[in-house]
Length: 192
Length: 192
DNA sequence: CCCTTTCTTGAACTGTAGGTACAAAATTTC
DNA sequence: GAAATTTTGTACCTACAGTTCAAGAAAGGG
Image (cartoon, rainbow over all chains, first blue to last red; front, side, top):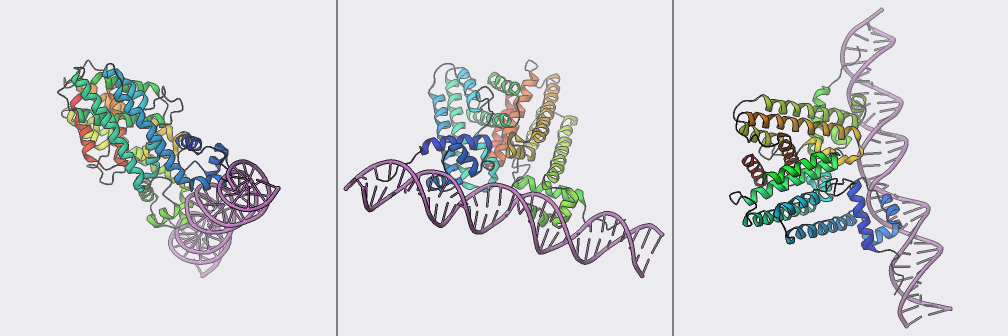
């Protein structure tokens, strides 16, 4: 009973996520949020408690979505190197995959918060491990298939890929140089 | 004539740089600065104009210092791969080179500011080009010396190294996993 | 020895981010 | 239709970052 919500909290979290992603945490003021979400301040705080709690929901959503993308990678078929190339495009959020070049929400905010926020770094570290694990599985598949030299250390290659991808994500956010990112991807695939 | 300064502005910029490096721009308040630099608020603003102008000086100093380190790389002697390994350690500011794991001041703040600040992104882009150029020169030297396969595209490899190093810088700031960084370095050298 | 100049200091000012309280309104169930 | 419950938006509050300023202190010039 009682009056039902006039907006969908899930949609609101999605919109907030987009906003945090584009502008960062600090630059996204409560006023910004209510303007974009189209709801009143009262509703915002009544529903989500605080800006930070809303952000936590948004980040969780982001990580879940990314997680799906990563596992999707593993379940694909076809030549491993081609899947890897596509993965680099997607995970790195290059200009081709995201014209807005927002980089990675988790990385951006982890950098913004610095090392002060324990729960944030923990989540990002978890993301690192997950991506590295996905790369490793993909590499090992490639080694079994004879596409990649089995003599190489799969874990080491996976760590390298993780670092490279993070570098691309960072560069995608700071500068606008698709040519550089493409060169990184091509060279990486070529080296394996 | 007039009363002489009771502090050395150069020293102040150095201390401010360390502070911005450790805490980021936003987290470094004027109060923080005057406590650390040991001067009054008035002196701070009288000498440097604003927090932002002081930061610009600090960033310039950082980039100059890093620039020296990069060119030093090129002028070294000995096996290219060994120099490259050392370069990765130094440029990436891994735990071994910097126990505080502050990452890279320029990258940290570029991420913090986002794409809004034109003068900042320009400086960072310049840094990217410089580092990439240094790597490329080193790789070409290695190719001439027969250490590195001359069939590979030096520019592509240099871009890859830049991305990898940026990824390491980022990870060094967010998490504390020296083993992962070491693995990245070893694998990278091994691949060339 | 005073006067000008330049610096120093800490208190006061300004704007805004983030959050709270409240009164009016709206929608559901009984 | 009335009660109950929750919405909404405005107005308000607090804290602090960033800056300015007026009064005073240390140097040199006349």
